[in-house]
Length: 171
Image (cartoon, rainbow, N blue to C red; front, top):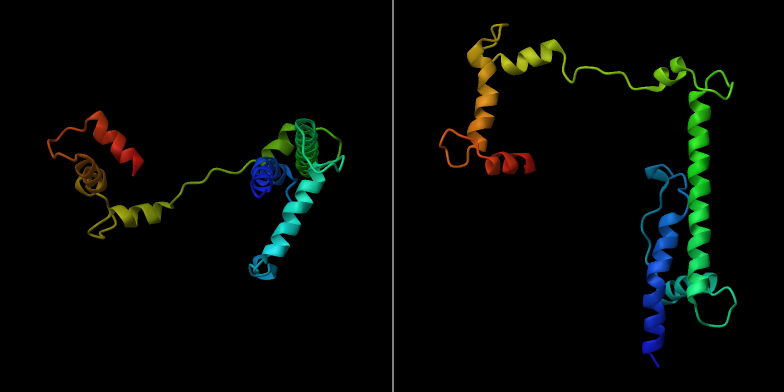
């Protein structure tokens, strides 16, 4: 008798997980406003499981059929698609600054992130100029790349093999 509820619970785990994954994203509260994780009793947990089952068992006959699972999946997919469309439309409206329902190249470019160097020239010079004389010699410039090569050359034979390069990329 106990096996049947376990089989049903296992069968519903995948559709319930799919439903949870396809729900529209809700705005998150600020971290300070979020409540700490609470404990959950088995009774409360079972109420949640039973609620998910009842939502799928649309004819309320006590069992879930393939058609009911398919209907639940279709509903969840439709909700996810609607949420995605809503996000796309909101993004478009944000980019369409003159509200003419068209994006001009200028509006599109204004939203694009600008490219900047990761470091300023002063930062780069300070990193490379090991003797702090305000200039970078060829020897100073070579120090970091050569150290990287030597580290990658696992067998220290002065040659990087494909395997050594692959291992370096994984780090």
